[in-house]
Length: 198
Image (cartoon, rainbow, N blue to C red; front, top):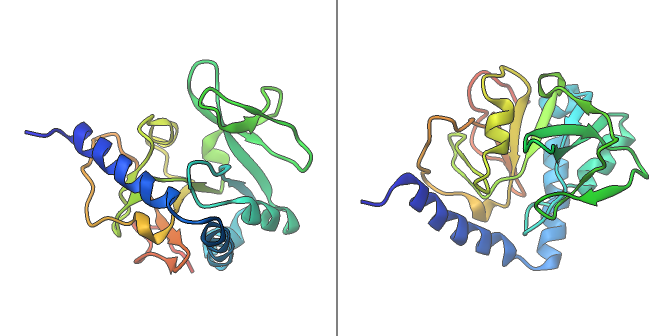
């Protein structure tokens, strides 16, 4: 019988190919549309500290959203993998130099100040796949799951292309559920759990 890990590996291959298959014009358009949809949410309007990511491998481009945060005076934080292989969120200001981390992804330098995860107001997370009930398939490292395990806040909201939606995902006991998912078509389904979106 195929186990959960094998199913997830197969889905990752398929869904990563889908998002990488979007051409540059579509990618840019989706990044702008997702920014507009995120900016309308109650989560974003109320947030002062916002964690995002820098897109790679076909993920939704967050640079328009980072610019929107700065224009509104919100503090931006990016994930950084510590030497002990734990994810933390470091402040990202205009003009800050970034470096390639252990996975080849740009991240803040070791000297950039970090914030405890529970002090973030909103975390906009990348994903490989999602369901309408808030299940998230990540890249398989478990960094977000470990970082936010057991925390009541902040709200974790997935950013995705609508082509990354699936009907169901196999679940592991450590998977952290999303408060919502936003794609180029808008908010997917309803907010999940106790969080309100509007």
